[in-house]
Image (cartoon, rainbow, N blue to C red):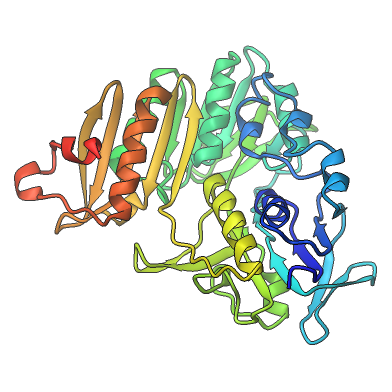
Length: 410
């Protein structure tokens, strides 16, 4: 089987790492990696941190040197769109009409960012942060004393805010939701995270409805629906993403907030797989279908899907885990804390821990804020506890404090 051609649609994190994993685990047939961006596959998290701070160039974010693809006999087709999938004849049809045959096909099409639709969003100085060009442009814009407005208090928005503060900017963060990172964090963790930003001078506001961005050629102000105006020199926005399921849907594959797969990350077509941001899989641990948008998931699924394309039948069911570095601290999150009904605070060294449990004490998630050296170990142990389906006796631990020593000893 591994002498067949493999085609991977999507040259982002998960697609690129899947190509590498296929070679590593023994695929000897042709591998073609197709991506619609002009860049060779790159690591996205540094764009909102190291690149903005000038500690790393966007070119240094590439996963592999240019020679790696030739050395590993991987055909890299950049700036190339796929028009459709011909399942009957097992071929991918490119936008220019070229056919690329496949024995196994991997859809790693990722997610597309939502563009800001406010009047004035086309003004100079208004940027999303998704690509190396975006990061380079924003990095050039962040100068000491400039007024920066960040629209969206998700992880990218907060990382941009932290970088801008470190560079000496005056920063506002505006969010329509009632609190930050509401899809990922319980209220208590969000409040602790926002408190860190406010302590460094960031004006963070929630429940904000914006009317327009103002300026002649370049943005000069953000106008609220209620009439308030905030003067600014730069606007950076992050208002969510959506899974890129169009190809799969047009090919007749099951789609439901992502491409639906079985535990092997295989679609209903046994020769077509999916991984990364676009993949919706059933989690045994949480008893529900999940679609995750983070670095660790992209990495883990890439290796698993490569093994399964090789016929190894390895089920995917990892505990979610993500992190964000802001200022001099890290936020790390394991599991799905928003599934918890009670948040139990604790400490480990200089790290603040938050355990998210159900009403009957089942551990559903854990969050930590603090220095990386103090955050990493407890989150790793709590992640393992979630995988073991640990339960806390909340009759004795209560909801305001907990003795979590037993969980942290394992």
